[in-house]
Figure 1 (tube, rainbow, N blue to C red):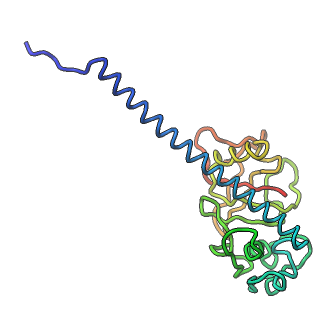
Figure 2 (tube, rainbow, N blue to C red; figure 1 turned 135 degrees about the horizontal axis):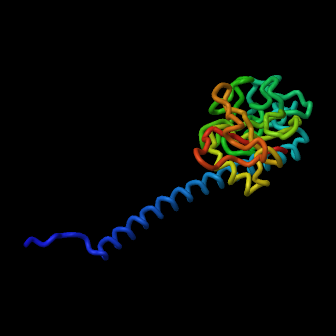
Figure 3 (tube, rainbow, N blue to C red; figure 1 turned 90 degrees about the vertical axis):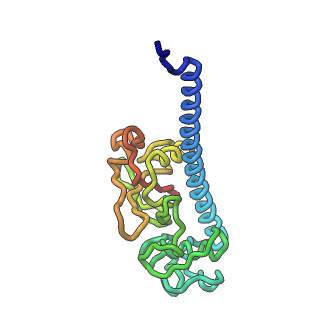
Length: 229
């Protein structure tokens, strides 16, 4: 009579242990990637905010809005605003490209790494705006494109750009603010990070009643946020 061949309990146990280790490694790797992206976004936001206030302290004016930039900052581009200058009204507005020119002023003054030159009043592009880890453009401007349970006031704010997964934004929010998408200093923003493209949908990114970021089920990958100043 032919004896049946099979796996012993020890062999099965070893295989299960190996599978468990592999799954644990994959999950840990995903966790490390997520943590790195969160840290990157926080570091980027903090660095630009520090640059914003440093510029304000040095020149007593806002980047992009500074009306003496060409005279006092070497290498500023002259294609936007009034020959490279803002109008000096204390607001980094989209008018005359001040929200794009801000990066020109900040980089040429040495407050941020890289070199950005404003070449058009409305075109966000590589070489004019820095980008987030998902290749969408950051925007520094004076507007009210951010979530608010009431009526959003117009403020200076730094947008992350879109195409950021909600689970990344909730971790950033928890670490730097209150973890709520429509309150506090870090909030959801429907800004696209491009002059054209699909704007994030608020209802897909956070609960309008509680303000909680939606990170259960299918996590929305086209979200965005902003840091209010």
